[in-house]
Length: 274
Image (cartoon, rainbow, N blue to C red):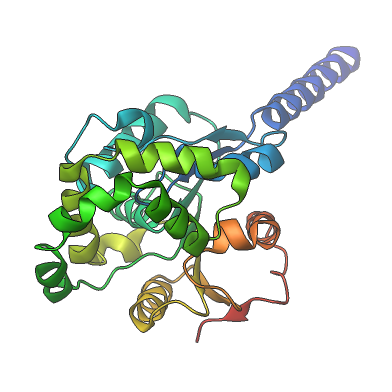
């Protein structure tokens, strides 16, 4: 009897060890959502850094990149696509969702629609305070300025403002020239009308919110609103930059994300949102 008990105990502990080994093989999933007017290439440096430890995915949002022919951008549909993908592919994986600008708004929408689907979220420069008056002002100008998006000199000027490195300039040129007018119009409409959903506070994820020190006041107020609306949210201001964190300070960005995932102290350069 004692021998049988010992054998059962040994078998049990062997089973536990194998379960632990298998769990270590199941990499967490990282999903990166790009900003408006660009596409998944904006995350190529982050993918190089995180791909060894994480399964990384960088979908193109509706109307962007490889999906430029889909001309009507929708925040809701974009969020539902992300949710559907997670439900189909993330079984047993921790899910980390990272969004920038328009992609950050989509990330907020995902968290608000499915509170249990994401474990960790990093929301960078998300506008969540509607500006309908601004949309009414810029709407008549968009069709007039649209042709500029096809001009090399204008594209290069925008790339410089965004802090894009030279090695991705060809991607940005292609995305700008392929962007459809209807995509531009619907993207601005969705972006400037987006409001933080009441259900956002129900999300189970740990959330990190960032905004650039040089960004407009409405962006800083949005970051504070997101941070204060969720019990597990922390917010930080990134010094000396505008709406360009992922490009201009990519090493700091990646260090920050890794620290947050591992629940370590964030880099000292970052200032807490209060």
